[in-house]
Amino acid sequence: MGETPKKRLNIQELISGIVNGDIVSLSKAITIIESDNINDKSDSNKIISSCIKEKSNSIRIGITGVPGVGKSTFIETLGDHLTSIGHKVAVLAIDPTSSVNHGSILGDKTRMSTLVNNKNAFIRPSPTSSHYGGVAKRTRESIILCEAAGYDIILVETVGVGQNEISVSEMVDFFLLLKLSGAGDELQGIKRGIIEMADAIIINKADGDNIENSNKAKSEFAMAIKLYPIKKSKWTPKVMTCSSINSSGIKPIWELILEYISVTNENNFFNQNRKNQNKYWLLQTINDKLQSNFFGNEKIKKELEKQYNLLDKNKTTPFAAAEILLKI
Ligand code: GDP
Figure 1: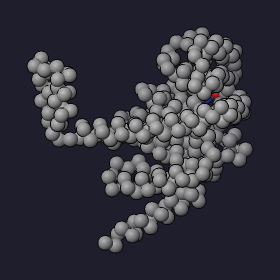
Figure 2 (figure 1 turned 90 degrees about the vertical axis):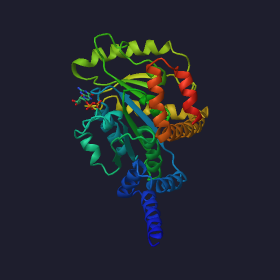
Figure 3 (figure 1 turned 60 degrees about the vertical axis):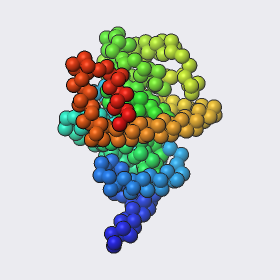
Figure 4 (figure 1 turned 45 degrees about the vertical axis):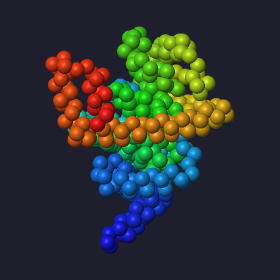
């Protein structure tokens, strides 16, 4: 009996803490959101509903690239620049590998050691995946909490694996692809679809002996980009070089992002895109829920095994088996 009011008070306190920019409350609330515990679900919903009402003029930026390209170094340098000009920066990550092997791709190494100690930066590692909806959905919800806590720049880092970039591009305003210059084979090995998603391609590690190669890579990408159809945002993606180690090129990248925000505010894409993203996450959440309900159902689990067996023996077809399962 006594527990409910106490619990309610705590959640209310937690929400006030978030809104007052208290990092401990924010971290605790994100942990509740990431929890698989069914009892946390209603608290989680309460927190999100309250936080979503808070006004925010945030800019959400997605950053992707293969391991080793320099994502964390880039984020550290960009984050330092942004906090030095008065912004509050939250860094969230989506790492699909974190649940598969303990040493995830984004890594447990001490990353972003300067930014970690910056009082205007908040860094949260990737949630681990679970049966109930993906890693990305939790990150998407964490964005809302960080914004309510006053972080006006949200950096979402992801590793270039699987479907992650799609999820990230559906939760950010600006999508940035980090690349390295190679020996003239820049366009090879690039995942299809990524270029279409990118609002900027940044050739990182443009320093020392690598400057010339980086400029060459920049020209190649700039030419390649021209072949792609005009984006819905009407924004023409840009290619730039930078060095995350010596900070050269970082300021121009931020100015580019501001230019994008101004262009897409003017043509109303910015707002429209966020509305579309909300619809995407609504449908995504329904899909996740339907799937987990379906595959979590004991009767269906049993029937599925039976149908697999029949399928192996050529006694049914995938389509007939699906019909039977969907009727349960
Ligand atoms: P991530 O795996 O994409 O997060 O990459 P990291 O940020 O961990 O960087 C991988 C390695 O590249 C590290 O040894 C960095 O010091 C190095 N690195 C990152 N950015 C630069 C850069 O701009 N120039 C140079 N020369 N090295 C860099």
